[in-house]
Image (cartoon, rainbow, N blue to C red; front, side, top):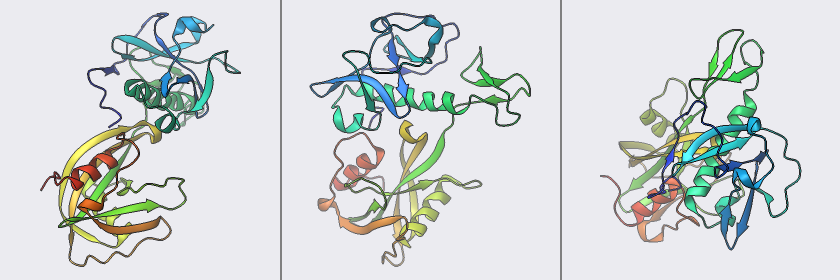
Length: 279
C-alpha cells in the first residue's frame, strides 16, 4: 500500500523550532497541484536550497528518513524553470515512484489543505495561528484548538464461498473495480458501518465481520479500516443505482486488480484472489 515505504520512514512528530535546512524537501501547492518534476516516470520534489524561498515562509511538516520536510506558505506564482505544477492525484498515475516521495507528497497535501481551510476559527471567526507546542491551530480569542481532520471509513470485502462483491462507483472517472466502501456516521461502530454500507449499496445482509487492516488515505483525509464479511441469507444483489453503476459477484480467479498496489482496496482484492483472507 502507499504507506508501505520500508526501509524508508516518515516520522510525523511535531518538532517545535525545527529550523530550516537547505537539503529539506520543499512541498509547494497551488490548490490541488504540487510543484515537482517527473523524469522517466520518477517524481522529484525540490529541496529548500533549490528555490528562492524565505525561511519565514516555510512551515515544518514531518521528517522523511531524517530529512525535514517543509511546506511553503508564500505565493509561488508560475512554475520556476525545470519544475511544473502537477495534480497531486495524478502522481498515482503518472509517476511510478519513488513510493516514499509520493506518500510524503500526499501527506503534505493533506496538511496543506488543513492549514488552508482553518485560517479562521469556526467558532468566533478570529484568525488562527500555529500552536507552538503541538500540531494544532489556535484561536487566541476563544482558546479553541483545531487539529488535523481524519475521516474514518470502511472498505468491505463481502464474500460468499469463492465469490466476492466488486463495484464501480457512479460519477467517477475510474475504470477499475473496487469494493464496497463508505464513511462512518455519528454514533456508529466500525462494524455497524460495515453492515449498513453493504445493505445500502448492495441490499445484502452480512455476518462474521472480521477486521483485516487499516490505511491512511491522505487524498480524502481518510483513515480506512478494511473488513471481510460473509453474506447472510440471500445473495441477490439489489444495487443502489444512485451510488453505483456496477455491483456483482466475481469468482476468485476472475478478480482483477487495480493499476498499482497503493490502495487497501487493491490489497484486499488480491488477498481474496489468492485465498488468504482472514476466516
